[in-house]
Image (tube, rainbow, N blue to C red; front, side, top):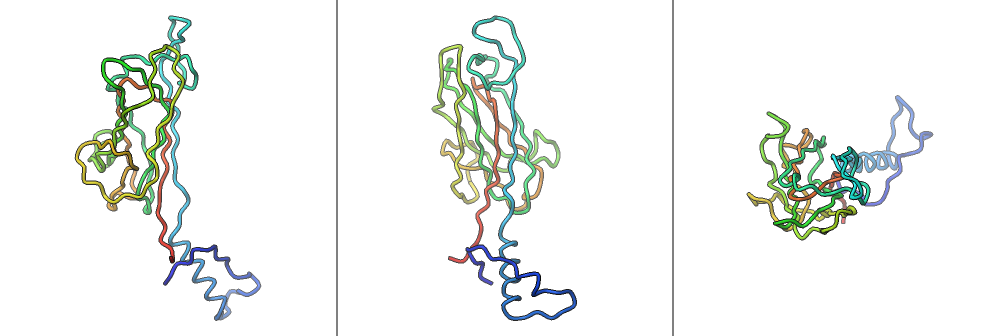
Length: 211
């Protein structure tokens, strides 16, 4: 049946009683409401606050804290650092949008961030690659010790199953193959001269409605 785009209210409780036959408009309301429920879902999301060993530009002593301040130093030891973030998908999950807060410092090479989607069937960190993902380049950088956070976002543009076998610099959401929807997924993020302070994952689902 066609799926109505507008909100469809359920019939009045006064018109429906257990053990009684209902027909006509009441049946239509029930059918439309149930049809809409089959084509919608709550927005799945996951949020990670990331802390690092940092030190203030005003003090040589180390401390542990988040990057949500403007005096943490981007250490060169973060070059090539890998982060793994788990996400519980749903049977309707199709694409995952990623929002990352970070600070980057220009070094010998340009900083970058790579996002890749993996399965967790055998091991949470080395499972099968489901989407070779994307690579953020041309990041906002600083040469100062005081480095406020910047943000990057994959966007929410609907995409078909990708064919790339290496990370693409064309930014897009990560794609969840149909056979892996509903499974626990691993989003592997590799940074180059970048400190991540937050990772936010959003489930994108494109509903099917009547034009």
